[in-house]
Image (tube, rainbow, N blue to C red; front, side, top):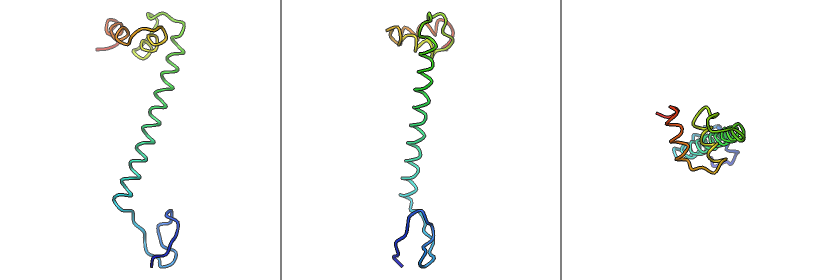
Length: 95
């Protein structure tokens, strides 16, 4: 019938025809949702890294309990990540 109506409605208010999503629309919606999920994951990782950095700010490397804390300590103390990895491997935090 070529009537115009908001895309949020799935049934045409004029003729009653059901509106179905095309494959491209479904693909686009899926991509947008995936991008949102990835963004949320990155935000959670950033918050976790900030918490690790706060915990190890005034500690010695021997006080670190996991690899994340060791890497945060290295960053806070201007050490390279290789140093942190080697230390963590030596302490059995990394296999």
